[in-house]
Length: 264
Image (cartoon, rainbow, N blue to C red; front, side, top):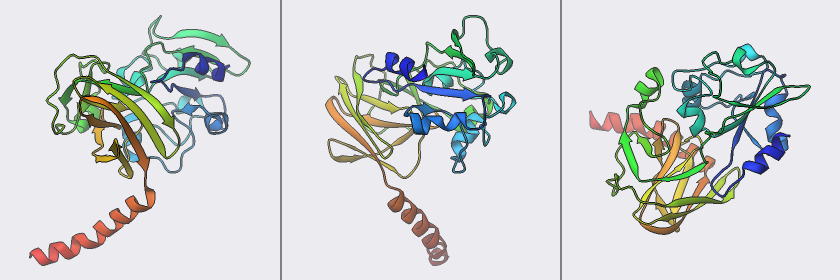
């Protein structure tokens, strides 16, 4: 049923996510075999910034193991929408997991022998072209939650983007051409330029290029990825380079003490 629902909400810019909570130990990991994106699950290689943003534990086999955080305080939140959490399947009624929910926040769509299934109609696309940005203290957001900012119109950045002042309200679009484990390719139509937001978790071993030219990946909306795009139509490619990334980190750790000693 979930796969059919995901197919029904598919669009060129969308890749909706699912949460499977409190149904059993193996359930949260079924997305790996069934071809859909699940937010949580058993993950021994969890990224620290993802855990800080969500307060996710090692597993969500029990309903009581689904923790919320200041940044992700409820399924009715800007951060849930940014993650693209479209469908939520729970072993108990969802109100027993998320006490902050109000009537109408989620749409109840099914009761199966395994779960209660809900839809979040506000889930945002996986890729978005935005023309407005604002600087934000991500550490403060982790402690105090999302500010009064509409994530559909404004992207929060840790540092100012080079070459894009922002502010112009001009149409544009982004659509996924390819989505794989180690490569994401996006076509962007940016009449006045813009910031391409990819709502996948930021990690320093990812690289990006625009029409083949290297581009910087900015950390956006606390844990996601963004790239500044010039005006016009472009193809933006994200690619994962774990060996080069790990080597660069190790080399930096080895060289830093030597550089410090030379400077003394």
